[in-house]
Length: 250
Image 1 (cartoon, helix red, strand yellow):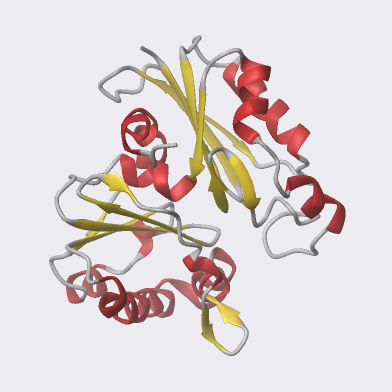
Image 2 (cartoon, rainbow, N blue to C red):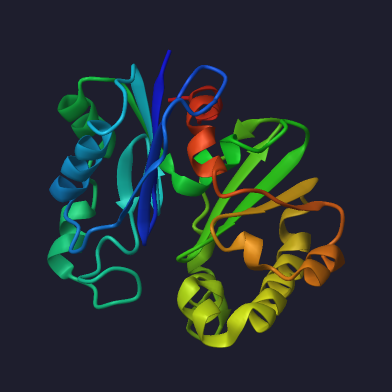
């Protein structure tokens, strides 16, 4: 059973094929996320990526936003004219609202598809299945996934929660702010976020992943405690196999 795993972010789309053990069997394909990105262009982009890789028996797609049973309830970034934190396009927002990504991808590719939030696929690649495990991905914005005993819990769009006034977590710790304030001050914000969320989730383990997790300063990582673990961004692809066994039953 070969799985095509595609990690769709606000800035980049990455993909590879995995065997049953979750080992990559081809060099990763990485492209910039194209904008403006309609649902049709999204699907054709993913199909185009699949043709650059060996044939697969099924595919796993992780994408930003609230995804329920393969249908988009809401997605950020892709509804904006030029990508993350640019002007919102009402026509794109309407096109994405209720779009059945899974069925469309299955019809276009000819293989079964599993479509989840990107942090959920990321989490499937790292959780141990012991206790309550929270996964936060730090990239263009903030991704979130929660697992209880290895079972994926319903998705929470923590990125939209306000930090102060009208500022959300997406805006407060996203890539735009990281570039503006630099690694040190951004790392301090990550620690503040972790300490604010600790009494909310009471996790047994917190995983910090995504492309920017490696930029948290080592000293602040140590201060966050032994229950906080930094995990590689490659989990967003590696989780494509285990996700088939950990998604919410339909």
